[in-house]
Amino acid sequence: SSHAPFRDACRPPPGRGKDGEFYAHTDGLVNRAAELLAAALQPHAPAEASALFEGGAAFFSEVLGMFEYNNIDVEVPSPLGSLFLARASALDAAARGGTTDAPRAVAELQLVEKLLREKEWVMGCVWGEETTGIYAADGIADAGGDEDGMTDGDAAMAASVEAMGATGYDANFAQQAMSQARQAVDQMSFQQLLQAPWPALHGIALFATVARINHSCAPNAKIDFPSNSARLSAIALSPLAPGDEMTISYIRQDTDVKERKQQLLEYGFVCNCERCMSEDSGSIRKANKRLK
Image (tube, rainbow, N blue to C red; front, top):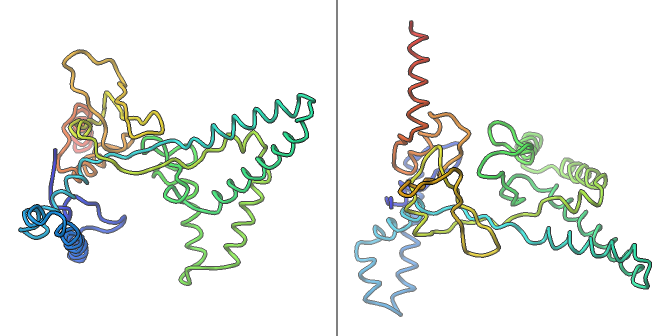
């Protein structure tokens, strides 16, 4: 498994590089965290705490760096979508049954629809993947995004920030945006409300076995979380023969070789997989033709 001090392993914020200010801030966070952890461990395990932190924060920083390099994204689908769909189906059947339960079923269906409309309105009033919890599959933008991976929500955020200007907040603009979101939700049918996505759980985790799987830009497997649990599955994307190495992609696969190599430098290696070698050769041939 790869490892490095946390300052080298972690990613800088979007739009900036790792300059002196970034390193100073990162080292400060790691040092402070190491001090707090050492203080918490000292009363309960003084010998172990002394051994772990006798060199200051260096070992702790390496552990954080190892986790940064080897963790994977966790995505667990929300169970609420299927729950509401099943409940709505049962209520609809009861409402159409003509029994004494029909009025109650109709009333509950109205409550379900009201709740779902409110949920969609709230989702429409927040922007981007980090707030909605709805991410593009496998890091690739869906039909609502553009070629740079920007979703409709991200675009709305960018437009709103530009419209608000330096003040950072415009009550009239915010009210207008919420009103537009409400109008859009009011036009949705009940079936559309039931089919609308719910935010998934997103996090990070460390699985020792998965951390040993190497990268390929043309992987033969992917990692999936099939149910609401801490378990994962490795699913083959192509036929695997005994002895074949299983590979997964650490990054988006829909970018060119130059961008992929740049992204993979964050993992501490230069990718020389079959796809990269092929695309590199193609780029060289095209460059030579232009020179001629």
